[in-house]
Length: 442
Image (cartoon, rainbow, N blue to C red; front, side, top):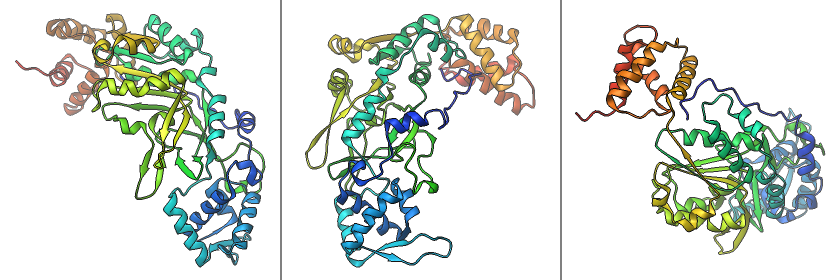
């Protein structure tokens, strides 16, 4: 119900609150062995960074790779011994040595890029990622009735509906949310993620043997705090900066969804992998919005989810043909304006634990929404104007009440009022807004 106004801001946790917890969950690596990665993979990653940047000192390399300076010194010593890296003089504004590639090092870097084009922070091994997802699992989150009501205290929504949504999120099982367009399904799905807790650790990238999958996506993973600073070159405290502290992810996809978006994305030009949508959503929520409007048949989409829903893991394929098993720790919500029985058979619907219908608001609920929107827009609430809307427009035109109408009609009426250099919401402005909002074929 993105028409709702007067919503309070969700409190964001600071690093001081989860610092001890995250340091235990992902301790900062001190040695190469602590990273869980092979020395050659890390050495190749260093040469790729130097190939891209030219000359870098230890602090710059530490910031780029999200690894401690003492750890990098071990790798740089190996690269110097192999003749891949040479030491350059200090810059005027730094006491740190600078490093650059030799001709042999540039050839090695080009070969490394041709095999895997990833250039970024050091990845974490897949096995460590699996352990992290389990430790942060949505199934560990306790959702109570009090917590649900506190979360939706600023939202006009029926208590009976909350008492169906709350247990659904608590269970971690999939939901099938349906109802008429404009009844608030998408908005409520977004807000449900608040019930899962404030923050999780998200890796920059995941290593599968010699392949690296870019994982962190700023459009999905919203940082709570930066993972490393220039001052962290020699520090061995705090959580592993290869992980980013983020809010629990919420992935929302609609009519643009295709089956290939649920597989590893490989760019043949850059030789880079990117994580699919459901992998990005781990430890959070994924909403399939406008189900039935996708370019892929619903039955094909449902078949793609059968194994992840039942087994809580998914299978992805690398370009080599190798299949990998990854966690599926996602509260999955299907949202549709269509009849569920037209989209899926009973066998699949049984696999979805919760089928929740969103109905149109009654007159009192609509009035509460109208008041919220008026408050958020700085418009004085006038009950007479709203009575005009109910009795002269909705009743006469036989239009059902929808939660999205107050926001849209008030915004259009304000456009008219500003154009006429008028203040407030007049019945004339509302009539004009109504005539422009609804399609009239007569």
